[in-house]
Length: 324
Length: 227
Image (cartoon, rainbow over all chains, first blue to last red; front, side, top):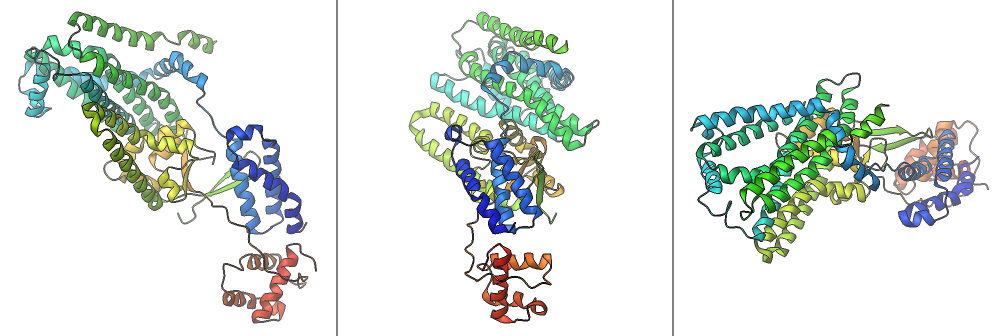
């Protein structure tokens, strides 16, 4: 068949498809076009055009049309609205349990330096200056000095909002970096986990040493349940990425990395949510000086219990049904 | 490295073609996005000027969202194109050339930080240069690709000629050459077209404008026109 006859025969169907592709999703559902059929016919016509060596211009045009239709046919929609609830109730804790080795390793990378520095700064007055500058230590001490009547500075609700923004930008940024660094063979995650462990451990040890216990612990215990856990989980997700590159198993490294990224993201979505909760608590609850210390310690402990119970227990029943 | 074509075979057995975009247009596109982001942040800053310290808090939240989610938002909801990518005709797609999904977009943009290390996207640029399809680490982990968006070309009006049957000894590839000569009649200068037409002199026994108009007639016949 000559190219011109070929074009004349199919032009209408191409134009129809083109017009349909220009409509948006909602209109598209009502427009009368059987996309899979139209797409398959189009593919066949492109194959014919190539086989018969029609001109490049026609082949390019059909190729573009195929590409546009391909985008509509194979649109990947992974996150459905229903999926979110399931993720929160079961998927997130399941993903954490499924990667318990990475989570334990991340915990160790965070807790061991924290313990060493915590005990060290508690016993040695000078050690804290190996981690922080004297100005930082001064600022830190003055924030938690029980001599102050309020925590931190004199704070109103507008300051709370400012601190919320500050924690969102900083803390979530830190967690995201802890995760992203994992793609460098895990080294970035290891670095940020240990760095945070050292810093936080030193802060705990030093503040305990100077005796500001009654202000510091009530402040950190509440949001700490979410924030410290989330940083460890972000590190664990990063280690999953790193592991896939160091030990790709039976796959090529790029394939292993892709599979690992899918797994790691199951943890990262939840981590993000935890950090938002942590920023909220840190800005609006932890800093509230009018709440009695006992209540803050009690609620803070409750948060820890809840977080651990969530990761240990949530979605268990489904694990069992999957196994059967 | 020279051939940047990226081919994917669809389940229908069709080869989809796209051209992977290299570091330079991507860096430029990124610069445009940084510019837009700063512009938005400045505007938000002015708008919140009178909201005091609480406004600063909101501004920080905006800065956070723009830093991490500005590309995700545009890539997923605007056909793989941030404003910067749009300006340079680029788009992000999954490596099977389907539209990028939320998960993939999150991964590639979260890992942007690792590509940035140790400074100025050094890791990302090295990764792009080493790989076949210019993928930075984030692209590799997310299985995504930055490609050129092909712009639709307007169909060309063919010159008016009376179709003539081709000479008998015109081989298949010569026929194709004749047809593309006809198709490109607006892109090439008249003199260059005549020069090309002269190449077939042993077959057509014509030179200059005669040869060209004869070949155009032949091309029109080959495309299916009848006298």
